[in-house]
Figure 1 (cartoon, rainbow, N blue to C red):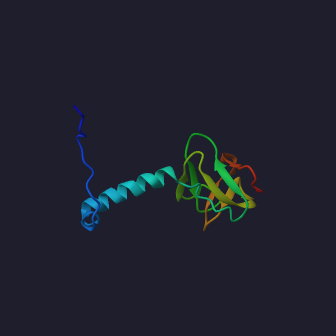
Figure 2: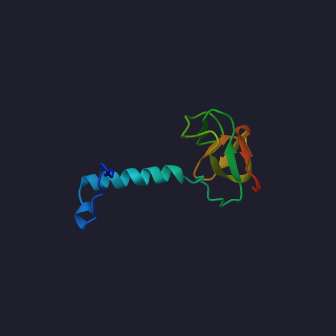
Figure 3: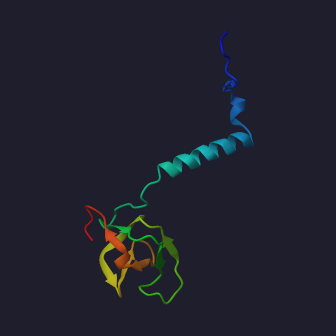
Length: 114
């Protein structure tokens, strides 16, 4: 006696691609793909790519001081573009408007000219 599969694959018709069920399924699949193919977030436009060191997130400030609240946080190990050689008060200038992070928590990646 042959075993029959307990499930069947529906035929793909135009009606299969309509409605909220398809939207939710497609969104979930795309989200999973995005998580597994996530890039480094760098463009290497300046030739200086830095990696966040340590186990704690790194705060990003709008100036080269801790006078103001952080505007962003960088996860440990993430790579970011930085301005080569632009360090003030122990903070390194990151690419973007008013983005500064503590330089001692950043390390240049292989091949970067910082």
